[in-house]
Image (cartoon, rainbow over all chains, first blue to last red):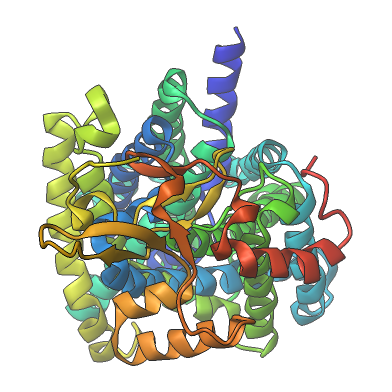
Length: 409
Length: 130
């Protein structure tokens, strides 16, 4: 019975924790500009994150070694350091974007400028990292994040033309007036948002924080194969809403309030209130995950003690890195750099860096020295290799495409 | 641990160090060898860990910068990376297990300093999260 509860809780928190500021921004912007024509990318991205998060979770559970520990061991000190610098930078940028996102969500609720909320948000993020137990943190923000289901409720109440939406999604075509490069650029942004590297840093380190053993492999699979796709469905809902509300009117939403508008129009104040709780939980939860991931990656590269399962004095350098990342991340968005712009860059750069994270995972998940009988299945390897090839292509074309399309403008 | 033939590149470099209580204690950043007088294969005499040792492995400008940083962090004048004598190595697997507590290691000094001077000054540092 306890196991059933644990699995159910894991699935729920995986759904609520899936969406972050990157998903909100990428899905809304693409829906507004390209309708449902890029929905397939979300499917590709969600399958990809499922395949690799399951591997990362399984590796961490069986060998007790999280992702960046293995990156160092597999790639050696030099290459792993380059990997660390890139991964850390992207995770840090995402952290800044999430802190900005939380502040924007509070601005929507209070009408007090988001810049004033940033210091408080940063303090709260740090406080949770410092004082709140890992499991409590995971469950509270994961469950609160389920409030985003309100968007799906609004969509259902709208009685949209489902046939038209499905047709748009299954017959992808570049809309008139948009260039192919821009369309592909947004496809990459969506993929980056769905497969952000911090998700596996956090997920695999979380398996160690939670003390997963072989008997928890079931929980791992349930989280990933049930929770993540349902979370992905939630981010697709945002794309559908943008398709219905913004695309016909040619509006390009540049602010979180516009994302909230559609739900508010359908469900009124109460719907808006629930949505704001969802926004807050999704971005705050992701701020915690990225802040911790900054500490995890650095500590795991250098072999420092890390984790919330020990007293902070036992893991001084881990806590120092996490604290500094939060302070500097808050500083970055306090500089009045638009958090939405920071988000856009963080997801596109994530896409370019994906092979750095996923290649070592695929290697170790096949190594019987670590995995014993729990190595990848043939099917897992086939899908994993296919994705790796795809991610390599994405990594090569991202930056040229970014320059060519002037970052999708 | 004595008399085992290892491929240092494959079996030792970049492995995680664990102290006697399974606490994380750094990585095998580099190794110290001694060459027997009568010839024959070199022996590993110590594990070198920490920024100073890592700097040597990295090389280039980044390595030089890291080495400079490591030299500043050291209180003694001797310019050598922190070492862990190979005698305290208990077992080599996917991690390297040591038979001593991490506090006894030369490599733990930076961590201890940050712990004492920064982290433990923040309220709540000595309690596990609740």
